[in-house]
Image (tube, rainbow, N blue to C red; front, side, top):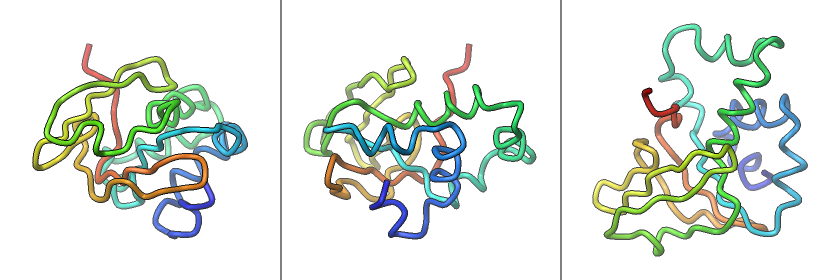
Length: 134
């Protein structure tokens, strides 16, 4: 979380994690992968969706969104480079890791992979991972 904070381009994700009490949780994990949509990615959400998620009555939805962007182990890009696989998120859903070019995670373009942090790895995404259509 400190690596994200230092970069200055993840203010929305950090605010969301703070609001649902996941900042300390993530900091305390020994190995974690953060699938980090940058602030521009959050700006691509449908009009009003971010305000809806950040409203006090929607903490459960916001928590699900944050957990969808966390994997409870280190997943460096090399583990899926040139392949398509999946990994379970902390939200209980699986996310597709597509290491083909252009690389995507959960359908979101990977802007930067393998940003190393003290307790894991960050992959910067250009889109927020949304739940699979039902």
